[in-house]
Image 1 (cartoon, rainbow, N blue to C red):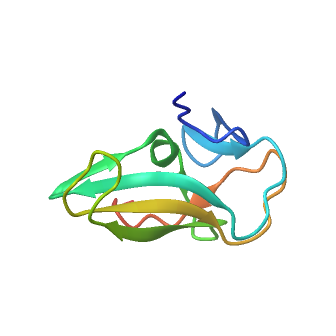
Image 2 (image 1 turned 90 degrees about the vertical axis):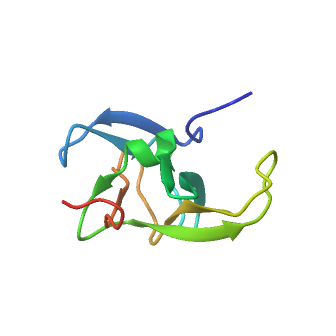
Length: 104
């Protein structure tokens, strides 16, 4: 069954901007939370995980680029980025990254 977010995350009103990603429980440093963006050719697609993460200079997550030539039904070169925590995250804390794809 498709799940747009990991069970440990939820979407709530953000103090940063609009809606944001929040933890339901504590998450350890180095945890890979899943794919935020996929680039196929010149097209950059956001997943629900990537669509609700807000920017912060003092971020608690990073996007890690992964390259692939085959993933499931995608049989051509593409890139995808996963969200990884850079420190331990407390329960009910908003997840943030330093934006690299969008101007702020």
